[in-house]
Length: 161
Image 1 (tube, rainbow, N blue to C red):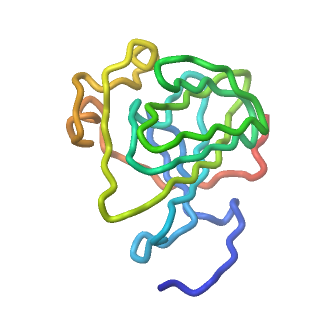
Image 2: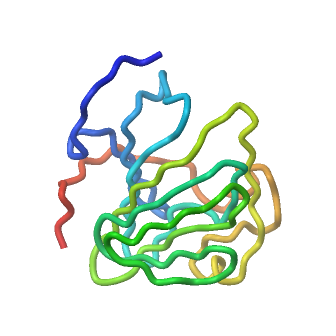
């Protein structure tokens, strides 16, 4: 069990993926949080945060800055700063950066030992390169067309437009 701590977003570990944006994490990968995961994802226009998917745990999202498109249940919805999205377990979803500058989204999801993912094929997500080539429950298959390279970066916080 981890001790309590404080970390500023500007000092947190940030890893960039050329297609999936920047992930800013708060937990030590060697000692992950047991009950839920929390991170901030920074996306540029047209950049998805991953592949369209659902999980068997609840996830919640708060747009902190900028704009994005949420694809939820096959429907696209434009979001802006301070919009909140709740995804009950089993809800297909993905977020794509939109607007003039970067978008920052606080992402929180439940964790449990039987956590499972499902990656369906979705036409809307495919337009952004965020749909898996075939339905799968295997992340390696879902991301088979993405490089697995992440580069440590420094993120100036708060985001600049």
